[in-house]
Amino acid sequence: MKIAFSKPSLPAQGAVVVAVAEGGLLSATAQSLDAETKGSLGRAIAASRFEGKKGQSLTLLAPAGLAASRVLLVGIGKPKDFDAQAAQAFGGNAAAALLCSGETDAAIVVDAFPAQPLSAAEVAAQAAFGARLRSYRFDKYRTKEKKDEKPSLKRLTLLVEPLAEAKSSFARLDKLAEAIDFTRDLVSEPANIIHPESLAAQAETLAELGVEVEILGEKQMRKLGMGALLGVGQGSERESKLVVMRWQGAEDAKAAPVAFVGKGVTFDSGGISIKPAGGMEDMKWDMAGSATVIGTIRALAARKAKVNAVGVVGLVENMPSGTAQRPGDVVTSMSGQTIEVINTDAEGRLVLADALWYTQDRFKPKFMVDLATLTGAIIISLGHEYAGLFSGDDRLADRLAAAGKAVGEPLWRLPLGDAYDKQIKSDIADMKNVGGREGGSITAAQFLKRFTNDVPWAHLDIAGTAWSKKDTATCPKGATAFGVRLLDRLVADHYEDKGSK
Image: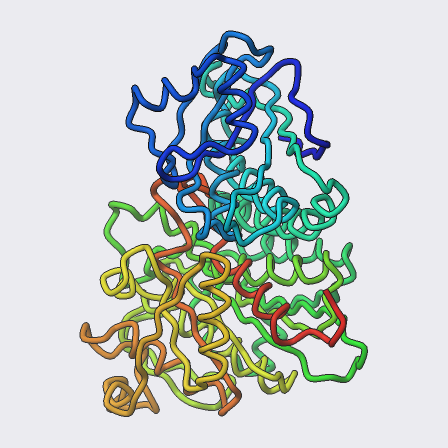
């Protein structure tokens, strides 16, 4: 679907989308359309349950007196609460209603309501961004599809004044949307397509944007002593990889970078501690943390962010075989610390252990944020609404939480502490990789903390938010790319050179 912008002028054909505030308050254009149709909009609202609340929509087909084939009323809630996220939802809900409607062209008329906090230009840009995100589809493997299931909408035009300001605001958001789509594609691919080698190759495409990409194979990692990461992948025929992505955008090339680290288990069978068959197909997206890191670096490079940033992703496939790691094995991490492997299905933390240590040791970053679909326990704790946030650094934690709130990717901070750390004490090694059922997400974070070497660090457990089983206003069910917007906002708000946009 193509996004366009034009000055306000109702189209001679296609669908027209207008906003309605809570209580049935029509926008200026909606009022004009109501008059031209002799009160049809008002009568339709009165005869329905449509009240202008967020997420509501109402369609009028072939309205008398108008050239448009349909008028779509989309609720925005209270005008005073119509912020960037609400504007994105407005655009996303409009796109969702029109994508398979049979319409090929549609126009969203952007009006400003009294007490609305955003300008019309910013509403248009955010609505276009929301529509762009909601129109995402992963359909490359579908060979047969009913006509009414195929998207018909080819062009969505935002009618707004001032036009130049709206286009400028959307340009940056469009680059972010491209990175989000790229991330969603990676997470959506099946494990026979995305595996350590092919995912590393996808990361390598970032070189086209000026990113320095380095790929370490097993021989190099073995020399570095990455026994924790290599142990996870030793049961697979696929070679494990460590990918390093560097974006040098700061004026000072030697300035310490910000660092993002991702878990990339391209398929997680559980290894010898094999998972139940039911739902195992979902484990193709156990690499979502790594995809988010790749997508974030792509977003920063695409908009020429004035920051030095490094992304490190550990890519492995966790499979059972005659060479697979066994429960009870002891491995030595790059840090020199030894780990007793109690459960081979607690593998993500082993991958991150070496990736985190490597990152802090080589790059001496300002901070590290790791992202991982790490524990099912976080879903029990927080459901699918929030990602878990763990950190011993209050400033970094606060900044992450604020960025998440601003972009609609919320985080909930959970505790760390010595009592939890004691749960991963091993009888024969420095630690064990699980600490029992109690506080499972917390003990996993405690495990990771042992490999940060006191660098400011935060861990985001995205197991409940990386994949959605239902449509939302700005994301169809499937891969969400949770974290790309959040980390891009974190960098933009706090870590770019002054004067950058």
